[in-house]
Length: 252
Image 1 (cartoon, rainbow, N blue to C red):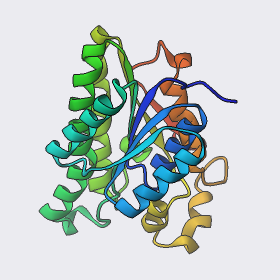
Image 2 (image 1 turned 45 degrees about the horizontal axis):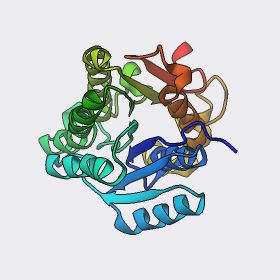
Image 3 (image 1 turned 90 degrees about the horizontal axis):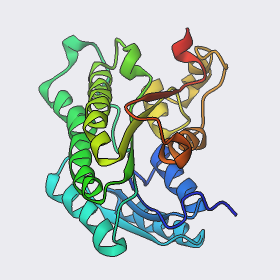
Image 4 (image 1 turned 180 degrees about the vertical axis):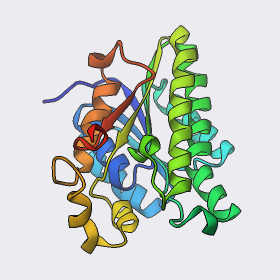
């Protein structure tokens, strides 16, 4: 039995789908106590039941990460119900509107930055509030390979992921004095509903795969493995880093 995260309280935002969901399940299999969050209450209830079926103590709390009051409540629920917060995974986000910069609107910008950059900022703020007081913890943010590479048709997504990487490095420097580590994973193309939307439909996925040196699209479980590594004792001397999980795409 995997007990790598036994007696640890783990918070995962954006947990009802994709990479966040895979991470929550992986932590549950590792013996963690889970607080999972998202905006879809029905999917949250289903996930909570699945995690409990794996033997984990699990609680779903509905929260919009762009709403500070809801984020504060989410973090407080971890402490009130389980006394501490050991690991936080900030996975909530969206891909933003695709198209030329000349076609983008203030509404497109606001939607992408609220979900990705503002959401990560608020989560970091309130997670650090708890972890700095307890003098321990590990935070993993979700960036993207496009956060460092750029993409002509996804300027809002790319820019918001740049912001997440900036937050990761800056907060990591402050967090060192509190014995808290802050890192990020930056996935390449991963088999999720978001990728289907970014690619313009599942029929375009073979073309996407052909652009990757490993000649395949990654799985959410593979990203979850990287998240668990960064959150684990095996990464105890790693902080302020962006771990690329992209089949070699950034080696090109």
